[in-house]
Length: 202
Image 1: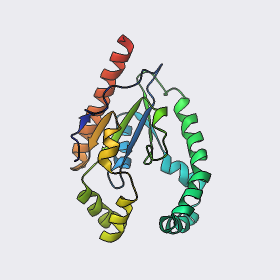
Image 2: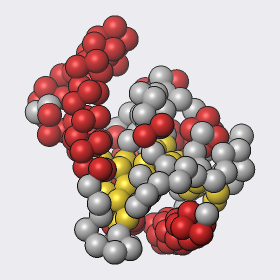
Image 3: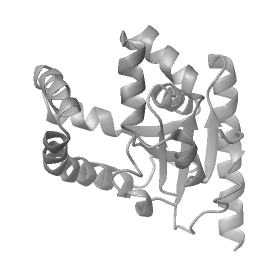
Image 4: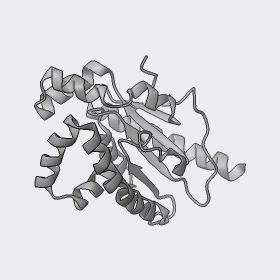
């Protein structure tokens, strides 16, 4: 069952952090994490996407070759992850450890496989961007050229979005227009501001 948007009813609150929250955005494939990140950037949030870090580490041609190989070979995927994940983790940690550029600024990292790689303990606030399974499939078929069977295979290889939502502090349901997503991003920022006040008063 896909949970409603807003503060998670299963994982409320957030760790106390000083002097700023360490924030991670995660979610399922084709749920709109990158689009949500762009909405946050329009609101002044500084973001770094783990996928962009990977792209910097591995040339595009090699990424395409590896993608075909590792999807069909779980062992090859594990070996690649053992090689790449520590490098990505180091860069994300280094960036997130730096204070935001100015007063009131917020930083967030975008990590699609946050729970799968068990990095969630590093972050005070986790926001999951989710949508229904059929919407994920339709988007993969339309935007990535997958067949329905390919899209379903990709979903089967990942943690379900409702499980990610249950482990997050805040949930964004991205099933509508860009304007609706922008409003959701603004509500998330407002929620963060309230959490900061609660932290400071606590």
